[in-house]
Image (cartoon, rainbow, N blue to C red; front, side):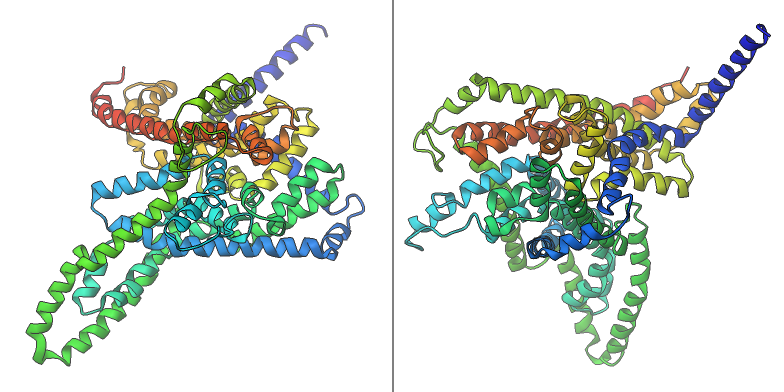
Length: 608
């Protein structure tokens, strides 16, 4: 009997190890670390919040009924939806022509314009919001210029109202609208426009019937992303708006910090989540690009009908055939080059948009060199006084060091976990891959305040609320999703025949990955790591909820400074954070360039 037990134990241990090895050989098993973190920190607490909102275990809608019974809640909810819709519409109105003009620009200029759009997108949202409080203030840049030129006698009220909130929201979200539009517009075959013009279609008709339908997937994706993110806006309405401009996120955050009753918090969070999920389910973002292809196919009959109508018109105008042919050729040439006035108008429009995007960062940098004891633009004198004040204040440097520590920890964790998940998803059957991808990306496609509330509850359940470890886990659920998106894009362009070739030369799975796959997707991994660090370092909403005021990060210190006293020290901090995206872009460019130079050598090198 005693001899049987050890043999049974060894058998069970061997069976367990074989099961683990089998799981490790399953591609979907590589997503397990990301899914486990998501379940512990976000998914399970979200279910608990939902049950709490339903007044479990009695299960009723009393909490939702109580929410809608209070007129103030209904007003704030409607205000949240309205402000999000208005900001989204403004972003479409500004972002669509901006994207169109960028795509139509020559390649060197196009790259420069895209980089200029990326810089404010990578800059801290808190810094940009802080900059607008100075630009729009009574003694701010705009009022000073208007008074200087004699256009107004007294300062205009541009901040601490709805106008200031819209200016700040659109400024933060405009790059998020432009980038999906650029992605779709770049893939549209420009010969289709030329074909429509060559068949006699006027410029506006060619654009309206050909280009616009093909670009609608980009409009849809950008609008959905902007709207959902705007639903969770927290800092911008608080900093730039008045008491009547609060959004539901502000109410939820105040309840988390001041109340111990989870029922109203869970109810408000799920109402916000329900709005986002309904919109996403009706007009869902398709990350696979199939919608763009479907849209492209569905618009071809329209183009054919357009060509048929124009051809019929040409048949009835054969007398002027030579003149019309010459005019059509000139119009085709105009598609590529355009008139002088259209070039001037396009250049002025792009310049105004870039000034709007880049001006806040420029103002912060200039103000940081002021020698005055208060914020002023332009500074009356220049010095490094506030940089030395920042470096000499343990509160500021301690907060910076805390943010750096948390950011690097999140980067290491999310880069490893996210890369494993992306690699596994790329080799998983399509149906299972779609489900797992949707699960992993959930934290970045719903309002961030909901993620923060769920993480607050999840970390409280495991005893990590108010700790650095808890903040790292809370940040990692969004960072994992970002890494998965970026690394998956790199793997989508990866030729798997190279792996098969390496294996045919007796390279094992690990050596194949380290010698072939990893070097080719390294730029995507590094880009994912950069975005993971930026997202963690800049986070305010989630950190403010899960830190429980016990872990002072740099964004929290900045937010506290903005609330209590606006002194030029924060301008010095904002200036450093404004320059930081340039370093990220330079690092990404060097990695990309080095990768391009090393790929031919890598492919030529035999695998032992």
